[in-house]
Length: 253
Image 1 (cartoon, helix red, strand yellow):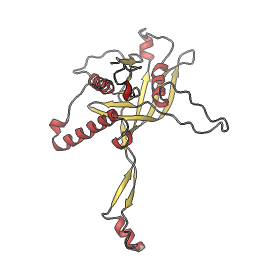
Image 2 (image 1 turned 45 degrees about the vertical axis):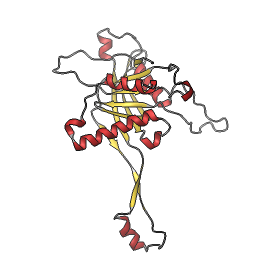
Image 3 (image 1 turned 180 degrees about the vertical axis):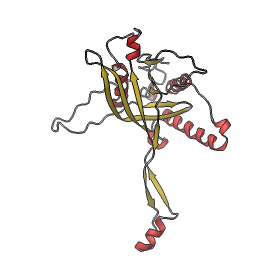
Image 4 (image 1 turned 90 degrees about the vertical axis):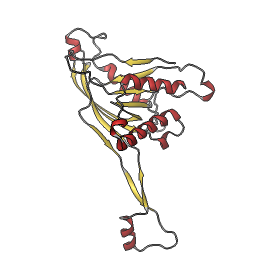
């Protein structure tokens, strides 16, 4: 079983005495699932975990789609009848999977000031590098087609688990907008705000990956339990428990 790798380091600010420890969000990168013939082999890579230095102030979850009415092939309705039918039953929403948007803040200024940085001089580049690896996929070298220098490049982002307290969303990063705000004398960023768009991989989208589909199914089960019995539907799973679950899934446990 591959051991989780907590990357890239701790940027914790000065410790303040609190009544209880705050739960931190995180992104857990999942290595590619092993082929069926290699289920007994050890995974080639560990699990990259990017713990949030600060939890997002807001999390926006959106879903878009298009309403499509089931047509009666026996008789074509008049335009007036079609308008009336579209506002009633007899149709379905062709929906895209859920998008989760949030902002992350990374700031190494306090760590540098108190001399506790294990990697001085790199600012917050290690944290940004983990996010960029998740968005681009593992060790990919995107190259445009020779006949078109500006062609779109097809990438395979790293599948990840977005941990927000007891909720775990399987998905991929589809957009990263990095705003570097402060720099050291060597023009290395020491603070940045990152807008992240994360598309949830729902069961239909991950039919070939049973492990990721199982994580989504557990999320749906949690929602049903919360709607029916709020007390029993909430389980305050720690981040460590989420990591252990991800490792167990990929290891075939």
